[in-house]
Length: 598
Image 1 (cartoon, rainbow, N blue to C red):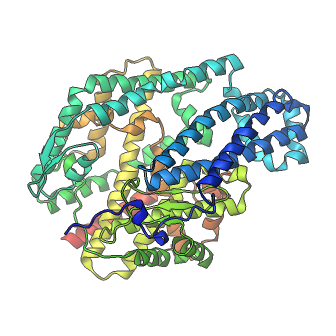
Image 2: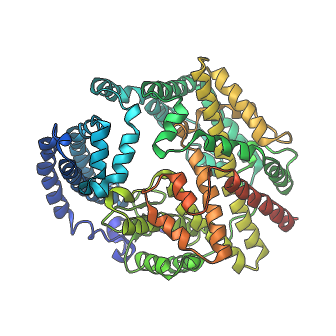
C-alpha cells in the first residue's frame, strides 16, 4: 500500500524547523510589519544632509541597517512559512504584503547611494578616516569603487525605468519553455507512459534502457527546434541588453561589468577556460569508459547522465544521516560539529521531510540574528539525500561562522564563495565514505558520483562560460547574433569539449538556447571555480589535519572580495593551480573507476 504524503499539520513538530527565534507567532510578525511601515519613511529626514558630517553619515547608515535587519527577519519568516506549505493562504498573503511594502522601502532609500557618491574625494576620505565610521569602512569603500560606473541622477533614473524592459527576454524565455512548450508523452523503461517535461527530461536520460534515452532526447529537442528562431531572438536580446548596460556604465565589456562587483579580473575567467581545455583528454577517456560499460557502439550526449553504477540500496534514517555527516566533518573540529549537531537535532534548524504543499528540493537560509535554517525533503532510501544534507549544512555553517565574527554589514558572503563551503563538505563526505567502505560496489558508486560532479560542475560549466564569452564578444564586435551564429559557436565548443570519439547529434547545437543561466550572464563560471577551490581546501585540511585556516575563511564572510578571501585561505584562483588539481583528481578517479568496473 502506497504511503500517503502527510499534510503540514500531520508532521511531528520535532521534524519541522523552529521559527520562534524569528517571531513567536504570526501575530508578532504582523506587529513587526506594522512597525516597519511606520519607521521606514524616517529615511527622508536624512536626504540632502549626508555631506554635513561623518557622524551624520554614520547615523543614516545605522538607520538603514536597522531597517535592513527588520526586513531580513520579516522576509525570512514569510519565505520559510511558504516553503513549508505553499498552499497556506495566510502565509502567501503575508509574503505578498511584505513584497508590496518593500517596493516602497526601496523607493524611499534610493537616494542614499547616489548622494554618498556625490561626496567629493577629500570629504569622502576625511569621513572614512573618522572614528564615527569605523565599522563602515568596508561597505563604503566598495560603494566608492562603483563611482566611475555610476551615472548622473537623470541617467540612473532612465536606466532604472528601463530595467524591466531589458529583462523582459528572460520572462519570455521562462514562459515559452515552462508554459507554452509541450513535449508530449513517452514510455519509460518499465513501459509506463509519462509526460516528458523540462523536469522529467533528466529522469528519462538516467533510464537504463538506451532506446528510452534516445527517444527522450530527440522528442525533447524536436520541440525546441520548432521554437528555435524565437529562442535565438530572446537570447540575442538578453546579450544585447548585457552589452548595453555595460557600455552605459562605462565598462570595457559585458564580461568586465559582470565581474566588477566581486572584483574578479577577467584573467581568472580566461585562466579557467585555458586550464580546462588543457585537460580534456581525461574527459574523453571517461566517455570511452562509459561507452564500454554501457555496451554502446557509440556514445551520444543522452548517454552521459545514466549512472554507470546503479543506485545503491540503502536505508539511512535521519539520525543516521546526521551521524554520517558529522563523522565526515570531524576534521573541522568539535566546535564546528558541536554547533551543527545541536542545530540538526534539538535546535530544529532543519525542516526534514516532505509534506503536502512543501517546496521541492533543498536550501539553506540564514540571516544575522536567526538560525541558518535548512529545508530538506529527506528520504531514507535515497542515498544522495545524505549529500544534500551535508551540502546545505555547509552553507548554514558558513553563515554561522561569518555572523559570529563580522559586523552585520560585512557578514553576507557572495555567491562566488557560497558554493565553496557547501561543496567542501561534499568532498569531505566522499573521502570519509571511501575510507570506510570495503564494498567494491559502494566504492564504484562513490567514485562515479564524484566524477560526474566534477564533469558537470567544472567541465560543463566552463564550456558554458566559454560560450557566454564568445557570444558576447561577437555582439561587441558588431556581429549579428542570429540562430546560425549561436549554433556555429556552440557546435565548435561541442566538438572541442566532447572529443573526436563522441557522436554529436545535430540537435545538441540547440542546447545553448535552453540554458536558463545564460539569461544571468557570466554566472556559471562561479560553479567551476567554487568546486575547484573546495577540492583544494578540503585536500589541505585532510592532508595537514589543520582546519584553522579554513574556519578563518568561513569567518571572513563578506569582509573580503572572493579572490582575496580564498588567497588568505591558501587557494590562489588567480593561478590555474586549483583548477588543474581538481582535474587531476578527476583523472585519478577515472582510472580508479576503470579498474573497478573492469
